[in-house]
Length: 627
Image (cartoon, rainbow, N blue to C red; front, side, top):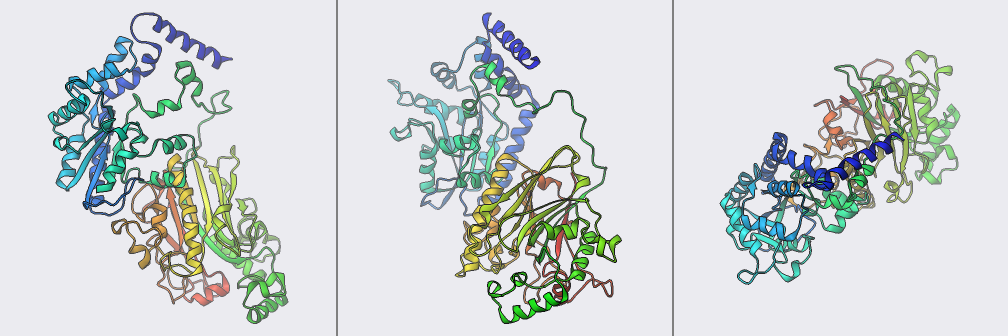
């Protein structure tokens, strides 16, 4: 009942304010937003930072061919363009909003038109300098605003005249160009608040390389914004949102915007729409801090057709003979032989279990296992009772384990050390089934686990195994392997993009079967234009993994001898991708390969064939993160 009494108190307070002359209930609700915009140095700092970042990005994107907008056209002039909103993006109208609060008024067309006619809006910090930089780089700026043309006897669009005067007086020289400003209803076909048609006009003559605004309607069609707010963006929207901080720059505006349509109109409704912690009756104990200087090791490991059941010597020999006689996996008479080599006996399982303890990772993405019983033998001490090296194995219960339940012998799995988890939160496991839809034979998908670390932070981990035999070719190469990988690319990209939209911290661990140092990937940097059908990197994040929001920590990893077939260059095809905020946890230059050790000599194996025979054809790759 305490929550209901509190809501009633708040509503009663606001109603009491509204009954007197002056601010209304909703004016009071907006008070802090306007005060912050006008008086907080943090608002100035955030705006300056956004424009500095946009200017730095413009130095690069002004030389590139890629589009920043969903609207694309012929770009017949060959020139580049930045499309900017005006109000609360380049012009500060907080004085008008302050006047509304003091007078107890709500926004209305007549008072807004009077404010525009005063031509007294000031420039937001950093905006003039950014527009001047665009001119220096020979990038044309277009201002698309929902200031509206309301004809008068002496002027068909007074708002256009006043807005142009206001901008020019503040130093926005570009506003003098007749084509630079695009107002609502300036032309009959521009009757809607949706700016799509006006952006399309720009796209028909210019390549739009950057968008700057304070509302998502400055970046997307209205329908796409509505779906985005509802948590159900289409693939194009989800992928486009990865441009935030790269080609899309949002200026903070807490005073008003399309977001208001998604929240209740009354204060009581807005209070009820707040999202406090669920099930929190009393203050909960604080999170257990992770020790200063401590890091977590995150790894990905393809264990190579690792089966649930250990083979006897006779079964292993039979499988080797069947594999030689019947290269086709499904043609082999014995079920246990319908997988790739090696055909492992107990000593092979024991060797892999010892290596898992040497790996000593806190989070491990695993690929090519038949199921949960297989990884229990390695990460849960299931071999200890029959092993002569029980002390060298991982003790039972050390890891939380999960494995994909569908598909054949090459499932994805995850092992997460229990000591790094918050014991009050049970990890949530989801199967990423659609990732395997492109694979006709073994429809292996991904395995997703949402977990809470001991410090109280949330993290989503995804283990994947993408299509093989397209490691260095363009995705549109004329092979079934590349065609299947090219179909998996947008599915994985959409998953990543959705996490970026919600800023949900995530790590993707897996055998990508793709060298991001290959000619096909290097040739498809953003500077060369749209090359998604050639590059997996371009699907995931425009191919630019060197900066947030998506970081490929393993892009430059070179395997040591023994960890790769010498027919290839040794570039890692096993990768670790961090984003949604998790990229900030990465310890720089921590990516490394964990080579296998020769049990006879204790030295790293340098012969790849020997590593395959004793362990796997993939070495584990690891990075360090610092929560």
